[in-house]
Amino acid sequence: MVAPAVARYDEFAEWYAQWIGDTPPLIAEQAGLLPAVTGERVLDLACGQGRMSRFLAQRGAQVTGVDISAAMLARARAQGPEGITYVRADVTRRPGWWDGRPFDGCTCELALMDIDDLAGALATVSAVLRPGGWFAASIVHPCFPGNEQGRSSWPPDEGYEREGWWASPGHNPGGARIRVGATHRKLSTVLNALLDAGLHAELFAEPPAAVPAFLLWRCRRR
Image (cartoon, rainbow, N blue to C red; front, side):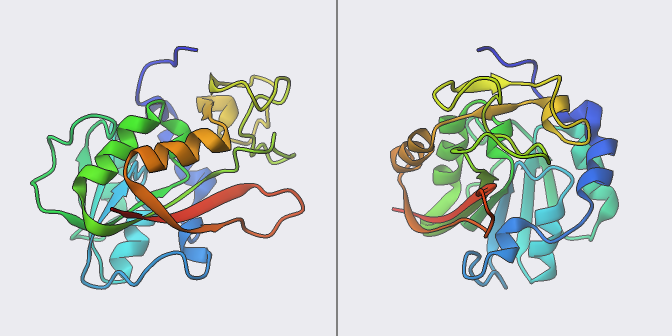
């Protein structure tokens, strides 16, 4: 299925900032997932309004946040702190914004579902990381149809095998999927994409829940 135009979050930036708030990122809450970042150069891929970027900066990282949404980046810059570099760019394309200095690590907090070209995004991660650099990410769990909060990876009225972008007009009116949709991929698709990008898994995690809502991982560039 062909997705709508890019920068879907531009229209909903104000709503999203109020909805998600500034709670600690999932990547940070999962014990043992995020390495020590003090003094490291870290890329926050698809950084949105900067929640993950701010968390990294507060822990001493030198942070660059990249996102395609001008409206989300405007909110990120307005919230500070100074010292975080924010760049508007399509993370699925050759990183022309990159100065060539390798990053020690990369994060992507609950955003890969909003990126249609997974291979392109992971190719960027692999390109900008130093050899042995780490990649920590979180996604809506690809194996389950969601719950009453609307954390749904695949269309509730269809099934797991149906990959691609979707939006649900009947979904939770308080959530993101009714507004911007999501791109569903099977678990095997996600794992194979990581391997194809030269990113080898070190750790996977699923926060405790009766039905898992999120999947997290840390990989290393070969």
